[in-house]
Length: 329
Image 1: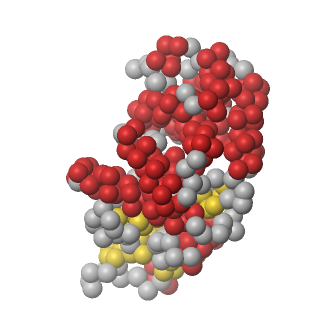
Image 2: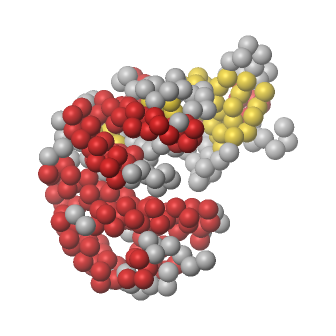
Image 3: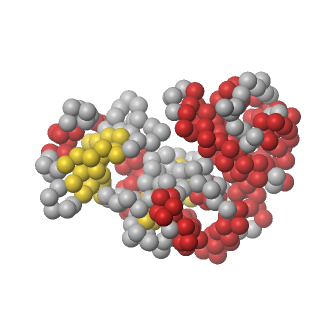
């Protein structure tokens, strides 16, 4: 127990789980830590520690309550102490979509269809009471590429020109995203739990604390251009059609916005993965950059991205692009 966070025993006791066994779980790219609690009846629960000042569980709680109140499957909140960084939730089990598909590759299409349908259901709801995914947020995220990846590659680039071309291509996206939908911002196979242990199971949602109100294409890109898992281009195309069938959004403007937000998100992720290595000492994310960069290149080929593509042509050497943004070994 000496390695467990201070205050854990007191919080679990207040929540009625004081006699439970505590099992630490692998962490992610943040300061959050997770534990599975189990007690004699076979009942389990998930404990999240998101300690201030590095973390704040209040946004997670805000979004979780809204999702559950509107029929989506976020984990039920069993107990909370946001000021101390503690949240006790329903246990969604171990069937994370990514791992489940590793064991059931023949069920891939069915699992993605269910994930797309869950997203369409979210998009049929009125947008939640969250901040707007506005130009300032889009630009701040896209700039992570020039702030982290470019310097790490020894590149001096036209940062002002980069901001200008993103403003140009994002303007029509912003015009078309009103009134907007709830955007979870990290909707992909590592953050979807298959609650019934099968492809058609309800989609349990996690890691949604950064939700904003924005464009319906954003989470679709997050799912279908997954940084952590290969998604075949033919499956991506089929799922865009599947989404259009369930959400009624698949015209040329939507596909253009999908490509634009794909490029924006993938540029952001390249920057974030570089930052995780250079600032946070987590080099394992560098191996994912080529997958993300390959998706970025596909997005840049769309005519809607012509100004951004021209900036890449002028600022990123061909050999780095040919290597899909990878760092030399």
